[in-house]
Length: 147
Length: 218
Image 1 (cartoon, chains in turn blue, green):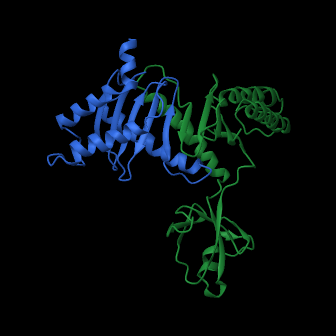
Image 2: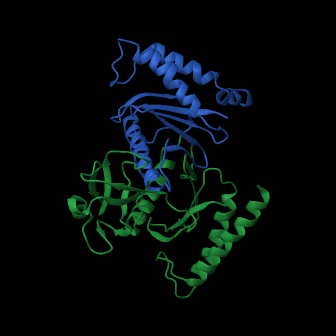
């Protein structure tokens, strides 16, 4: 098990934060382009899923898998979008994303008077806490012992 | 096995076959209103939908499915009266309106199919690992989409209940049915919509077969 990347988007599609851990594939496009493509894809998937759904949805889109990775998606009522890319063996990460939002983003960004909410996050404390939290996850740790 | 629908998409992204399970009914809410109507309705995509005023299980985005038992066809009723005009006339009240999630039209299905086709490609492009395929399954809280792409680019898509397992076997079976009864049919031209009775019959049989061991195992 391993965790590849983390994206944080605000409601307007600005990428507030990006972090990567064991990412193997190098970028084929610029970071900015990748963020736009990612946000665009999630926006389309959300509308796609809500149209296709046979009944009314509550949480909406949760995750998708390809042959190599699994993308976990969590959106807060304020439109903040948290995305975590992991490998296929990882189960439900909704609680983890919720935790990142409530005890890292809210604590170290929203409550930090120096952070502007619509600007990319530059806070070292947030960066450090997120890194620490992700590395403490069981989904992350098993990869270290394996490799 | 709870299958909501099946889609087959050709290599160019156009829809060549779709099937909806007849057993999965879309829930609807019926309510009698008095004048004036407190819901705000608007015409969206040739349907009359709720724009504002969620109440009693009627949600924003629900469409008007019928009035006083007369079914709606797009923005008019079966008797050719315009829905918005009927609802604006005071003498028609009290009035019974049936709301529910809008049914997908064929045009919308074609659009959704090509949307999946591009999402599939973007999914593989955004992969953090090299050599990734496109989206193979997509989970939401109400359904799970399973997608299998063949070597030739044809996509088989099954939409099931989120808890449904062993869909991969059914996808393979579906591919077999497609090869046997669509591709081997001399009257079938490649990449065109599949209209063959034998295909329908065999697809039905495969789904019924999937039902039985499914019930036995679970």
